[in-house]
Image (cartoon, rainbow, N blue to C red):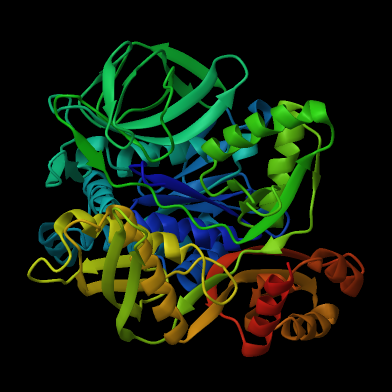
Length: 598
């Protein structure tokens, strides 16, 4: 999402705004991506364009502005009224929508079209004082002014133009593509990209071919014919086949092999990319998702991409000895492609552990291993990925590492303040020492030790999150102090402080949406409550009840079987990670006891 200049959000004309729609909308908000909306499948039974527009307002807090309205719906959907031109666009069913014609607005839709056009023109007029003055004086804007006003507000993210059609039958697609050209920003409309230069100072690159190269690798994909494809977005400068580029994240030079423009199923090899282009490169050896590629003579590091932390893990092992080596290669490739998928080896058991965003995520990974790499594997029971955090601030926590055994010893001494942060803040380190009580060269070792200590919490050994650690004091020895000694002192100090800071277990909570016939809704809500779920709302959608609830992931294993049983197979559900929350005391005690046994 971050590399896009604009996006078209596609909504089902019957289902409307789905849980995944909300997730994508939040991502677009986060990265300030201008967007249009396209209400698809207008020929489906139950299609309702205006209901989807209202759902955008209610569920997404959007500001939708329809620029077309449908002519008919379901099997009677024949075209749209273009509110900008105030003409009907009618598609020819015989050519599967490839040909269309303009005509007058149907009489029975004229009043509705005029009403929605007035709303659209009013929205366009708000783009500037000049347009508003003309609108107030004359009550109208011409076509060019409407498009200019809508474009200006769309680029700023203030409105979202809404269109509709049936993509499978090519109905409405042409008008939607016209809207992309008319309303979406070009790369030149996007502000300069921000980054850090090689001296650690803020730097920026403007979207121009004349600027030094800056590009972001945002996706990796394995291709059976050419090997690994690295998708990049060029923010500034030009990139040619054979160019040497610098990866400041890895501190390595890379050479560009082939450059391929990906257009759906078609690929077109090109020799050069310009500012604003998105393409795939072949031949990059050590580039991962989120890395920067730049001009070796004008180094800049762009902001790294953020990826969600996994919430579920399971053990995996090859079925046969022949699968063993292939499994390692397959997992490494899949982890490189998908940064939300992680793998590591358990030090105690030696098992390979894979982690992801849910059961379905890991099922897809295992299926891809089999399908794409020919690897058969046995998998263990899913395990929830818990976290730990601190609830209170503790000050003057000491950590010491002293070893004297003849000859050069080891000496490190730190005094820390630990305090909880807001959820999602991660780890923050601050050096507040004065007078050189801890020499400058050892400060990075203190931070490294703290980060290492946070990998294993004091309650059940889960990673610790959302903590600020401040180094306030310490001491050193001219001969015996070392980086290792201060790293160990920081580890001991953190563990000591964490025990005093009221540590708690955090569990992943999932947002669950169940669609069920009304007669089963009561039992399903009761079952969700018994799973420690908090029902957030309920609404009717075409004779079905939609139940939304937040439920701890630990309580959702096997839910699909239970739901089928309760509803005679008629209910469906979707689930996505929502947030981490403090586990109740009795649940935390069970988790701690279970970890102690394992």
